[in-house]
Amino acid sequence: MNSTLAGIAARIAELERELERELEVEVARSRRRFRYRVEKGRIAFESETAALHDALRQGVLAFLWSAPPLSLLVAPVIYSLIVPLAALDAWVTLYQAVCFPIYGIAKAERALFIVCDRGGLRYLNWIERLNCDYCAYANGVVAYAREVAARTEQYFCPIKNARSRAGAHERYRDFLDFGDAAGFQDRLAALRANIRKAP
Image (cartoon, rainbow, N blue to C red; front, side, top):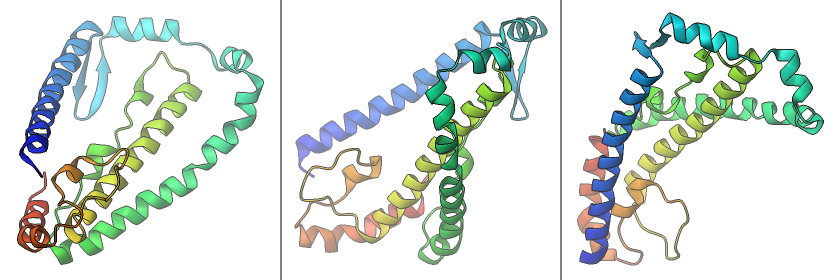
């Protein structure tokens, strides 16, 4: 990677760290503002806030009545994706459990990617909570699978593509340039060592 790209990548990495810090501050502000805390992994609202949430919750029948008819018709198609998502989740978990130890690749921690906590919001009816948890699970599984795939790619073939690639994972920026045979031989061991100590 040339010095200009390396400088941009370093600035991006610093901005991502700054963004993470600011997001943590924002979450702390939200906890104070909306009066909740996390206790042993569970969300607990203050009693007044919980009562307000209960009062604001739309009933299931009213929710269904106000829903566009087409959205109700396509709901089974949307929820049918749970089968391949659950299969992907199970298979990726098995894949990294079996393969990563053989190559010394650090495992991706599933719980960091799949966070389904919006179902505890009392101002949502049970259908809305189910929808929220479904979306959180779907996006979490995809992010988890992407990280496992990214670690695999970094170990076996950390080479950039010849053409630009939309939505490349964050590890991709450190990959070797396409066509850099000498760099591949020189840096492959270092890239593999880096994946062994992945956070």
